[in-house]
Length: 361
Image 1 (cartoon, one colour):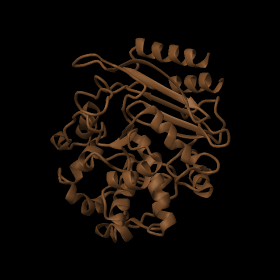
Image 2: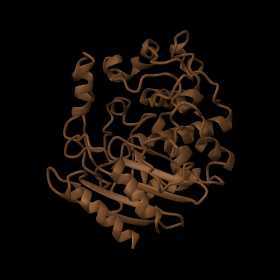
Image 3: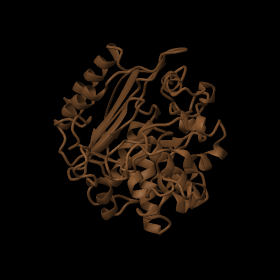
Protein backbone atom coordinates (compact mmCIF):
# COMPACT_ATOMS: atom_id res chain seq x y z
CA UNK A 1 0.00 0.00 0.00
CA UNK A 2 2.73 2.50 0.95
CA UNK A 3 4.62 1.75 -2.28
CA UNK A 4 1.60 2.74 -4.39
CA UNK A 5 0.97 5.81 -2.24
CA UNK A 6 4.57 7.00 -2.60
CA UNK A 7 4.49 6.34 -6.36
CA UNK A 8 1.35 8.48 -6.63
CA UNK A 9 3.01 11.25 -4.61
CA UNK A 10 6.05 11.28 -6.89
CA UNK A 11 3.88 11.20 -10.00
CA UNK A 12 1.90 14.19 -8.73
CA UNK A 13 5.13 16.12 -8.06
CA UNK A 14 6.30 15.34 -11.59
CA UNK A 15 2.99 16.40 -13.17
CA UNK A 16 3.09 19.65 -11.18
CA UNK A 17 6.51 20.43 -12.68
CA UNK A 18 8.29 20.28 -9.32
CA UNK A 19 10.78 17.63 -10.45
CA UNK A 20 11.84 16.12 -13.75
CA UNK A 21 11.90 12.73 -12.07
CA UNK A 22 12.31 11.11 -8.66
CA UNK A 23 13.25 7.78 -7.10
CA UNK A 24 12.30 6.93 -3.50
CA UNK A 25 13.92 4.15 -1.50
CA UNK A 26 13.00 3.20 2.06
CA UNK A 27 12.86 0.39 4.58
CA UNK A 28 14.54 -1.28 7.54
CA UNK A 29 15.61 -4.66 6.20
CA UNK A 30 18.29 -5.82 3.77
CA UNK A 31 16.18 -5.04 0.69
CA UNK A 32 14.45 -1.67 0.50
CA UNK A 33 11.19 -0.70 -1.18
CA UNK A 34 11.53 1.49 -4.29
CA UNK A 35 9.14 3.74 -6.20
CA UNK A 36 9.73 6.21 -9.00
CA UNK A 37 8.02 8.64 -11.37
CA UNK A 38 8.94 11.02 -14.16
CA UNK A 39 11.94 10.95 -16.47
CA UNK A 40 15.70 10.73 -16.10
CA UNK A 41 15.99 13.59 -18.60
CA UNK A 42 13.69 15.79 -20.64
CA UNK A 43 16.19 17.43 -23.00
CA UNK A 44 17.67 17.17 -25.56
CA UNK A 45 15.52 14.01 -25.69
CA UNK A 46 13.32 12.30 -23.14
CA UNK A 47 15.15 9.49 -21.33
CA UNK A 48 13.30 6.97 -19.14
CA UNK A 49 13.84 6.88 -15.39
CA UNK A 50 14.79 3.64 -13.64
CA UNK A 51 15.47 2.63 -10.05
CA UNK A 52 19.19 2.51 -10.87
CA UNK A 53 19.36 6.06 -12.31
CA UNK A 54 22.35 7.97 -10.96
CA UNK A 55 21.60 11.39 -9.44
CA UNK A 56 23.89 14.26 -8.54
CA UNK A 57 23.85 13.82 -4.75
CA UNK A 58 25.09 17.35 -4.06
CA UNK A 59 25.39 17.99 -0.30
CA UNK A 60 24.69 14.38 0.65
CA UNK A 61 28.43 14.18 -0.07
CA UNK A 62 29.03 15.97 3.23
CA UNK A 63 27.82 13.31 5.69
CA UNK A 64 28.10 10.22 3.47
CA UNK A 65 31.70 10.70 2.32
CA UNK A 66 33.40 13.62 4.07
CA UNK A 67 32.17 12.84 7.59
CA UNK A 68 32.88 9.13 7.12
CA UNK A 69 36.44 9.82 5.98
CA UNK A 70 36.95 12.23 8.89
CA UNK A 71 35.82 9.59 11.38
CA UNK A 72 38.24 7.09 9.85
CA UNK A 73 40.95 9.75 10.08
CA UNK A 74 40.19 10.24 13.78
CA UNK A 75 40.47 6.50 14.31
CA UNK A 76 43.86 6.27 12.61
CA UNK A 77 45.22 9.28 14.45
CA UNK A 78 45.95 11.18 11.24
CA UNK A 79 43.45 13.83 12.33
CA UNK A 80 41.51 14.82 15.44
CA UNK A 81 38.50 17.06 16.12
CA UNK A 82 40.94 19.60 17.56
CA UNK A 83 43.23 19.57 14.52
CA UNK A 84 43.34 23.07 13.05
CA UNK A 85 43.22 23.93 9.38
CA UNK A 86 46.68 25.49 9.62
CA UNK A 87 48.21 22.33 11.01
CA UNK A 88 47.32 20.53 7.77
CA UNK A 89 47.14 23.32 5.20
CA UNK A 90 50.35 25.20 5.92
CA UNK A 91 49.33 28.02 3.61
CA UNK A 92 46.64 29.18 6.04
CA UNK A 93 48.79 29.43 9.17
CA UNK A 94 48.49 32.73 11.00
CA UNK A 95 45.04 33.47 9.58
CA UNK A 96 41.57 33.22 11.10
CA UNK A 97 40.84 30.28 8.80
CA UNK A 98 44.06 28.52 9.82
CA UNK A 99 43.00 28.62 13.49
CA UNK A 100 39.69 26.84 12.90
CA UNK A 101 39.30 23.35 14.36
CA UNK A 102 38.16 20.39 12.29
CA UNK A 103 35.36 19.58 14.76
CA UNK A 104 33.86 23.03 14.26
CA UNK A 105 33.98 22.65 10.49
CA UNK A 106 32.09 19.36 10.75
CA UNK A 107 29.36 20.87 12.96
CA UNK A 108 29.04 24.10 10.94
CA UNK A 109 30.07 26.17 13.98
CA UNK A 110 33.36 27.51 12.62
CA UNK A 111 31.84 30.88 11.70
CA UNK A 112 32.65 30.56 8.01
CA UNK A 113 30.34 32.08 5.38
CA UNK A 114 27.75 29.77 3.89
CA UNK A 115 29.08 29.93 0.34
CA UNK A 116 31.83 31.56 -1.67
CA UNK A 117 32.84 31.16 -5.33
CA UNK A 118 36.27 29.77 -4.55
CA UNK A 119 37.04 29.53 -8.26
CA UNK A 120 36.93 33.33 -8.34
CA UNK A 121 39.09 33.59 -5.21
CA UNK A 122 41.69 31.39 -6.93
CA UNK A 123 41.20 33.03 -10.33
CA UNK A 124 40.35 29.74 -11.96
CA UNK A 125 43.46 27.86 -10.80
CA UNK A 126 42.91 25.16 -8.12
CA UNK A 127 46.63 25.26 -7.28
CA UNK A 128 46.20 28.80 -5.97
CA UNK A 129 43.31 27.91 -3.68
CA UNK A 130 45.14 26.77 -0.49
CA UNK A 131 47.05 30.04 -0.21
CA UNK A 132 43.96 32.13 -1.03
CA UNK A 133 41.88 30.45 1.71
CA UNK A 134 43.73 32.57 4.29
CA UNK A 135 41.95 35.65 2.88
CA UNK A 136 38.47 34.43 3.84
CA UNK A 137 36.84 36.53 6.55
CA UNK A 138 34.71 34.83 9.18
CA UNK A 139 31.00 35.66 9.37
CA UNK A 140 30.82 34.89 13.13
CA UNK A 141 33.07 33.92 16.00
CA UNK A 142 33.80 30.18 16.13
CA UNK A 143 31.24 28.41 18.31
CA UNK A 144 28.90 31.41 18.40
CA UNK A 145 26.22 30.00 16.08
CA UNK A 146 25.49 27.46 13.39
CA UNK A 147 26.10 28.71 9.86
CA UNK A 148 25.56 25.90 7.38
CA UNK A 149 28.72 26.26 5.32
CA UNK A 150 29.78 24.60 2.09
CA UNK A 151 33.07 26.45 2.50
CA UNK A 152 33.71 24.62 5.78
CA UNK A 153 33.23 21.19 4.23
CA UNK A 154 35.39 22.10 1.24
CA UNK A 155 38.12 22.85 3.80
CA UNK A 156 37.55 19.44 5.42
CA UNK A 157 37.92 17.78 2.03
CA UNK A 158 41.17 19.62 1.35
CA UNK A 159 42.48 18.61 4.80
CA UNK A 160 41.61 14.97 4.16
CA UNK A 161 43.41 15.05 0.82
CA UNK A 162 46.52 16.71 2.25
CA UNK A 163 46.69 14.35 5.24
CA UNK A 164 46.34 11.25 3.05
CA UNK A 165 48.37 12.59 0.09
CA UNK A 166 45.67 11.35 -2.29
CA UNK A 167 42.68 12.92 -4.03
CA UNK A 168 39.27 12.83 -2.37
CA UNK A 169 37.66 10.65 -5.05
CA UNK A 170 40.36 8.01 -4.76
CA UNK A 171 40.36 8.24 -0.97
CA UNK A 172 36.59 7.68 -0.87
CA UNK A 173 36.87 4.72 -3.22
CA UNK A 174 39.67 3.07 -1.21
CA UNK A 175 38.38 3.69 2.30
CA UNK A 176 34.58 3.80 1.96
CA UNK A 177 32.98 2.64 -1.27
CA UNK A 178 35.10 -0.36 -2.20
CA UNK A 179 35.22 -1.90 1.31
CA UNK A 180 31.41 -1.86 1.47
CA UNK A 181 30.99 -2.98 -2.14
CA UNK A 182 29.35 0.24 -3.32
CA UNK A 183 31.65 1.21 -6.18
CA UNK A 184 28.90 0.28 -8.67
CA UNK A 185 26.31 2.39 -6.83
CA UNK A 186 28.20 5.55 -5.78
CA UNK A 187 31.12 7.47 -7.28
CA UNK A 188 32.66 10.82 -8.10
CA UNK A 189 32.96 11.74 -11.78
CA UNK A 190 30.70 8.96 -13.13
CA UNK A 191 31.20 7.96 -16.74
CA UNK A 192 28.08 9.00 -18.73
CA UNK A 193 28.76 6.14 -21.14
CA UNK A 194 28.44 3.58 -18.33
CA UNK A 195 25.83 5.12 -16.03
CA UNK A 196 22.21 6.14 -16.52
CA UNK A 197 22.48 9.74 -15.30
CA UNK A 198 19.68 12.10 -14.32
CA UNK A 199 19.59 15.24 -16.44
CA UNK A 200 21.64 18.30 -15.52
CA UNK A 201 21.02 22.04 -15.75
CA UNK A 202 21.90 23.47 -19.15
CA UNK A 203 23.64 26.47 -17.55
CA UNK A 204 24.89 27.30 -14.03
CA UNK A 205 22.24 29.99 -13.72
CA UNK A 206 22.11 30.10 -9.91
CA UNK A 207 25.86 30.55 -9.57
CA UNK A 208 25.97 33.13 -12.33
CA UNK A 209 23.48 35.21 -10.35
CA UNK A 210 25.34 34.78 -7.05
CA UNK A 211 28.70 35.64 -8.59
CA UNK A 212 27.33 38.77 -10.26
CA UNK A 213 25.71 39.85 -6.98
CA UNK A 214 29.20 39.83 -5.44
CA UNK A 215 30.60 41.95 -8.24
CA UNK A 216 32.80 39.11 -9.48
CA UNK A 217 33.49 37.79 -12.97
CA UNK A 218 31.16 34.90 -13.92
CA UNK A 219 33.67 33.77 -16.55
CA UNK A 220 35.54 31.98 -13.74
CA UNK A 221 32.59 29.62 -13.22
CA UNK A 222 33.68 26.15 -14.40
CA UNK A 223 31.84 24.70 -17.36
CA UNK A 224 28.98 22.27 -16.82
CA UNK A 225 28.84 18.86 -18.48
CA UNK A 226 27.49 15.33 -18.28
CA UNK A 227 28.75 13.56 -15.17
CA UNK A 228 30.00 16.82 -13.66
CA UNK A 229 28.43 18.10 -10.42
CA UNK A 230 25.98 20.97 -10.37
CA UNK A 231 28.11 22.63 -7.66
CA UNK A 232 30.66 24.95 -9.27
CA UNK A 233 33.24 24.66 -6.50
CA UNK A 234 33.14 20.87 -6.84
CA UNK A 235 33.61 21.18 -10.62
CA UNK A 236 36.51 23.56 -9.97
CA UNK A 237 38.15 20.96 -7.73
CA UNK A 238 38.01 18.23 -10.35
CA UNK A 239 34.51 16.96 -9.60
CA UNK A 240 35.22 15.85 -6.02
CA UNK A 241 35.02 18.20 -3.05
CA UNK A 242 34.17 17.89 0.62
CA UNK A 243 30.82 19.61 0.09
CA UNK A 244 29.58 18.03 -3.16
CA UNK A 245 30.44 15.91 -6.17
CA UNK A 246 29.18 12.45 -5.25
CA UNK A 247 26.77 10.76 -7.68
CA UNK A 248 24.82 7.59 -7.13
CA UNK A 249 21.63 5.57 -6.93
CA UNK A 250 18.92 5.64 -4.28
CA UNK A 251 19.81 2.11 -3.23
CA UNK A 252 23.47 3.07 -2.86
CA UNK A 253 22.60 6.01 -0.60
CA UNK A 254 20.29 3.77 1.44
CA UNK A 255 23.03 1.18 1.91
CA UNK A 256 25.78 3.65 2.87
CA UNK A 257 23.47 5.32 5.41
CA UNK A 258 23.41 2.01 7.32
CA UNK A 259 26.92 2.80 8.61
CA UNK A 260 25.34 5.38 10.91
CA UNK A 261 22.55 3.26 12.37
CA UNK A 262 22.59 2.24 16.02
CA UNK A 263 25.37 -0.30 16.45
CA UNK A 264 27.50 0.99 13.59
CA UNK A 265 28.14 -0.78 10.31
CA UNK A 266 30.81 -2.55 8.31
CA UNK A 267 33.13 0.48 8.48
CA UNK A 268 32.08 2.49 11.52
CA UNK A 269 32.01 1.34 15.11
CA UNK A 270 28.94 1.91 17.28
CA UNK A 271 30.81 4.69 19.08
CA UNK A 272 31.76 6.44 15.84
CA UNK A 273 28.21 6.25 14.47
CA UNK A 274 26.77 7.57 17.73
CA UNK A 275 29.27 10.44 17.93
CA UNK A 276 28.34 11.64 14.44
CA UNK A 277 24.56 11.47 14.85
CA UNK A 278 24.16 13.03 18.31
CA UNK A 279 23.46 16.75 18.65
CA UNK A 280 26.70 18.64 19.26
CA UNK A 281 25.19 22.12 18.96
CA UNK A 282 22.77 22.49 21.90
CA UNK A 283 21.33 25.95 22.37
CA UNK A 284 22.37 27.19 18.93
CA UNK A 285 18.96 26.86 17.25
CA UNK A 286 20.04 24.08 14.88
CA UNK A 287 20.69 20.54 16.04
CA UNK A 288 23.83 19.33 14.27
CA UNK A 289 26.07 16.30 14.60
CA UNK A 290 29.22 15.67 12.57
CA UNK A 291 27.93 16.46 9.10
CA UNK A 292 24.40 15.34 9.95
CA UNK A 293 21.34 17.40 10.84
CA UNK A 294 18.99 16.16 13.56
CA UNK A 295 15.22 16.02 13.04
CA UNK A 296 14.79 18.12 16.20
CA UNK A 297 15.93 21.14 14.13
CA UNK A 298 12.93 23.45 13.59
CA UNK A 299 11.50 23.55 10.03
CA UNK A 300 13.88 20.91 8.70
CA UNK A 301 12.86 18.46 5.99
CA UNK A 302 12.32 15.48 8.33
CA UNK A 303 8.76 16.32 9.36
CA UNK A 304 6.75 15.00 12.32
CA UNK A 305 6.70 11.38 11.09
CA UNK A 306 10.32 10.93 12.16
CA UNK A 307 11.66 10.90 15.70
CA UNK A 308 13.49 14.04 16.89
CA UNK A 309 16.66 11.94 17.14
CA UNK A 310 16.51 10.93 13.45
CA UNK A 311 19.38 12.29 11.38
CA UNK A 312 19.59 13.32 7.77
CA UNK A 313 20.59 15.80 5.09
CA UNK A 314 19.34 17.32 1.85
CA UNK A 315 21.01 18.60 -1.29
CA UNK A 316 20.53 21.51 -3.67
CA UNK A 317 19.76 19.29 -6.67
CA UNK A 318 16.65 17.95 -4.91
CA UNK A 319 17.97 14.94 -3.01
CA UNK A 320 17.48 13.97 0.63
CA UNK A 321 18.23 11.21 3.13
CA UNK A 322 16.83 10.66 6.62
CA UNK A 323 17.38 7.74 8.99
CA UNK A 324 16.31 6.60 12.44
CA UNK A 325 19.24 4.91 14.12
CA UNK A 326 17.24 2.87 16.63
CA UNK A 327 14.57 1.50 14.26
CA UNK A 328 17.08 1.20 11.36
CA UNK A 329 14.58 2.88 9.01
CA UNK A 330 16.10 4.86 6.13
CA UNK A 331 14.25 7.19 3.77
CA UNK A 332 15.95 8.27 0.55
CA UNK A 333 14.33 10.61 -1.96
CA UNK A 334 16.38 11.47 -5.04
CA UNK A 335 14.45 14.12 -6.95
CA UNK A 336 15.81 16.27 -9.76
CA UNK A 337 14.82 19.94 -9.61
CA UNK A 338 17.80 21.31 -11.61
CA UNK A 339 16.83 19.90 -15.00
CA UNK A 340 16.34 21.25 -17.55
CA UNK A 341 17.09 24.41 -15.55
CA UNK A 342 17.52 25.55 -11.94
CA UNK A 343 14.18 26.10 -10.18
CA UNK A 344 13.62 27.69 -6.78
CA UNK A 345 11.17 25.05 -5.58
CA UNK A 346 10.90 24.17 -1.88
CA UNK A 347 10.86 20.37 -1.74
CA UNK A 348 10.56 20.11 2.05
CA UNK A 349 6.75 19.58 1.95
CA UNK A 350 7.25 16.75 -0.56
CA UNK A 351 9.93 15.17 1.62
CA UNK A 352 7.81 15.37 4.77
CA UNK A 353 4.85 13.76 3.04
CA UNK A 354 7.09 11.01 1.64
CA UNK A 355 8.38 10.30 5.15
CA UNK A 356 4.83 10.10 6.49
CA UNK A 357 3.68 7.70 3.78
CA UNK A 358 6.80 5.54 3.89
CA UNK A 359 6.97 5.43 7.70
CA UNK A 360 3.39 4.14 7.80
CA UNK A 361 4.63 0.87 6.34
